[in-house]
Amino acid sequence: MKVVEQTLTLLTLQERPIGIWLLSIGTATVGLFIFISQNPPIDWFGMFCIIGANLMMFTSPVKTCRFDKHHNRVTFKQKGWLGTKMISCPINNITGIQVESLNLMGIQFYKLSLRLVQGEHFYLTPVPSTDSQLLQKLASYIQQFLRI
View 1: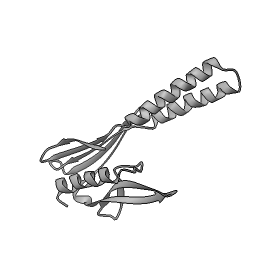
View 2: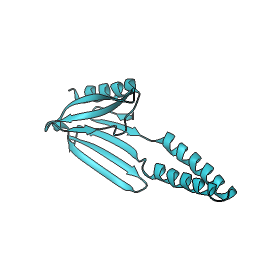
View 3: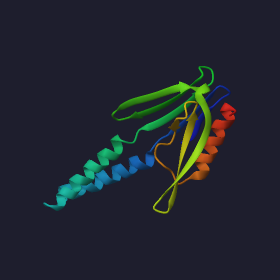
View 4: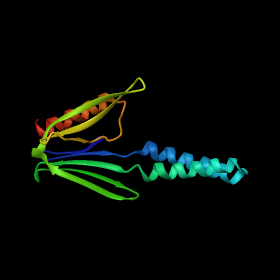
């Protein structure tokens, strides 16, 4: 995620999964080449590559998080090939921003979450990242904007 717009009353963060899209295009190209040029059972691997590439493309939406002080709303929007999903809540319900860490097979991963009044956590980065500095920087931007 990166900051795409910042004013006194508006902060917009956006994540475009361009790396995943490029990987899926490459996988589909290799799969198509294998499928066309080979005979069974190898051509089934090509078909598997094409299906995997489509799944990567369709399950990687553009994520936008918008903090709007004027309307007292934070809106999280996921726009992908299969539709758009929006979640919204009042800014007043946010009690803090937290970078959570988790260890998976010896690798440290991080997620950025909003802590809400009800004790709930809302993840701004649902997919864990290894870049803790970027998430700390984003948390700092959000904290300064909201003045938490």
